[in-house]
Amino acid sequence: MGFDWKAMDKDRLQSLLAELHQELGRTDTLDADSRRLLLQVLEDARVLASRDPGASDEPDANGLAALQEAALELQSSHPRLALLAGQVADSLAKLGI
Image 1 (cartoon, rainbow, N blue to C red):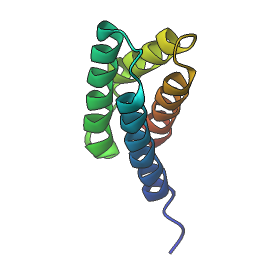
Image 2 (tube, rainbow, N blue to C red; image 1 turned 30 degrees about the horizontal axis):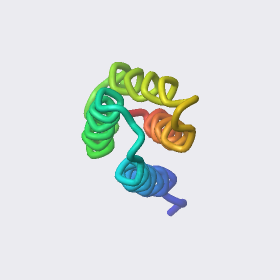
Image 3 (cartoon, rainbow, N blue to C red; image 1 turned 180 degrees about the vertical axis):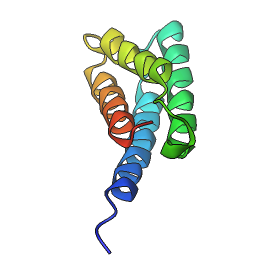
């Protein structure tokens, strides 16, 4: 029996999602539209993370694209949020979600 990399990656993803949610809660300088976008993307990421990677033939490119777009939009104004959003997108991609 080998090491379960998928379980470790999924645990890392859950940790990143929690960290992103906490960081979003601490950020009071985020405009309403950016906050709404990030909350929607965070919820989408949670849904994607809860899916079984083998449940569909292809990863959800729309969800990943939205997360990557949010990370890019936040890069200059909120680098920590952008970093976490990018890490969540990377984790989802590694899981094949």
